[in-house]
Length: 411
Figure: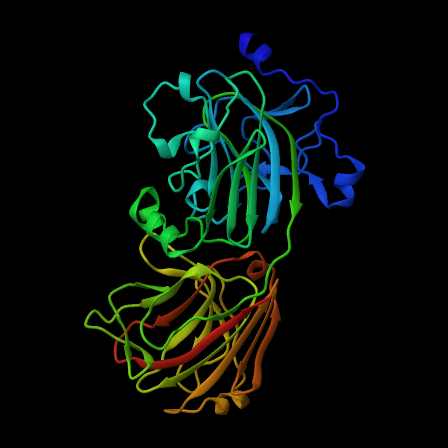
């Protein structure tokens, strides 16, 4: 009963937008009355321990590390996100964003960053600095000298700004933290700490908003968001000198020789991948390739790296003549989505340079080979996908492909 009183909410003048906020593009993520617009992580409905109490969306406090997460129906990319929050004594919760759903991800925090919320004075265990309120969890620490946190049972207001990689955390009207995502410093922190075994953590540029029930009652209200515009980028993915900006997976060979990126089968003769360390979702990509030996390779789009270091997603085929170069293959589930008709197989130039173009926007994918359109499809599952660009070496050995002029424009 004490907890119920502690976390009760005053409904007056909450969970509404002013006319000016509406004009400025703000939307409410919680209407103060229902859980419409929220569902389980990786689920189609809401079954996790959350309910509405006196105008608050409230965690019942029965969640755990592996459960209790709810997400918005809609994804968001660049935004300002503001919310009020109140914890029970010793409480632990969080606000996550850019969360990605796939069956491979059992919990959302291995994909999306978290603004941590925790009652430090009364928490039952010793906390590291990277676990405390206001942190970008396990990554960046706030300036504690300017922070003022109201105690358990009292309301606080937080804000996250995510603007094309620039991130800010605010608490009770004060900016407490700012950093740039996907910089060398960001990757150094990601790869050396808690997320070193979570290869997809923090890479997505777009995703779901997520609330966490971590075993303690917690209340939220006035959850509102304003989307910010995306800035287009022209990106040179391969610099002609080394594989900076890429990561190798598997034991096959990736190296630079005479300014060219070379993939070559190694002694294990298994699948191998070279994947960008950033996500690219909507883009227009061009690259050139030359097959010096068996050219069974490919370009993965919107793809993720599994725990066993294999890439899963959609592959635009690069293969010897007669084997569907420019076609699209799904590496999990459905297999070939589109194969190339026989009359288009002659477009591939054997043992010579070929120009491939891949344009993907929303659920539409178009591929070209040497200026000729090969595939133009719309696919709902691709439309929901997000992830890296990756080059592949097929298993079996005897493969050698050269690559150059890999660049894209984000859309």
